[in-house]
Length: 429
Image (cartoon, rainbow, N blue to C red; front, side, top):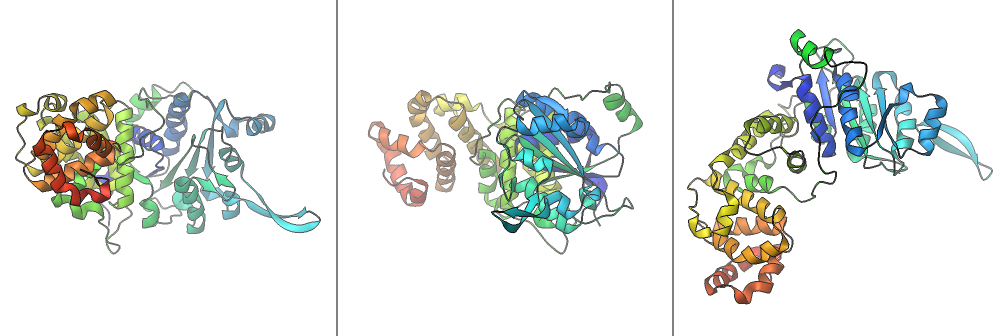
């Protein structure tokens, strides 16, 4: 039986993790007792934050007149539309689309009456938030359709707009309500959070005092919309450590208790969160920021692995100043702990691939290779080179073009590693 208290987060924290996941295009699902405010925060806190980020006017579908709805369906470009879909009140056909007979070229065919929120989400210039409420009260056949929308972001008629977000909320199996378990493959495609009921003080401070009848966004704001598609160096660094290689996938179907678990897919989603985390201005050295990261990743990797991964990230404080090391490699003393070495390699890779101009990369390539090739063992150097070439697609080409100007010892070592790096692009040294 799951120890539910171990996994629970507050409503206020649920706003933050839902916001980060939406920008990473990972659908968050919030589970908790009925009536505690799960769907409320999605409508009146999360939705206005997303509308603000996109520069759109926030409207709630259920508050619109028939004429206003038709107008938005025709021209949705200015609006961010919120749909609250209570799945316990919907049949499978109503979620996917009602099939009806019609005439086409004088022949009897079957048409599909697509739900309004699907029709709007299919429009390229649309934006909005679909809240699937009471998701655990929906039978498995309905859940399958819902999760297709949540994760794959598509319908039979096409792909949904990139600026349409999908989230969910549901009750716990202990709530004496109709309850269907979420199945493991679906949980591994989302971010799953268990929400605790607010105390009276929390509710008064965070909601009652602030509620004036209008939606209330938090100050948190993502600076960019398009996150990098490459796997974040911290994910590669963590899993490159031999001690962590088995953590790529940890799942026991006989002991699974409807909680997230690590898999290649969830590590990919972890990478997306790390990119969004940085875009939101969070730091890898600030403890409060890292608490938010850990809380967010628990919904993706599970409690134990998320705690361990963020604990490793916290070792950033023990790293030397990476820009200074790159400009003066002789001042660098290599750490003697394996976990810190891999963190240093990930940090240097991130700095090299994202924070430097092309001119700096050309000028500092010799220094970088001096650091890489002086690692304590060839295994570290090879792992380092693979990280760099993954995050910086021009890394090998840059080396090849500058090879003649580099010291002989660098060319010799790089030549000795070529056989390990052929599939990563180092075919000429």
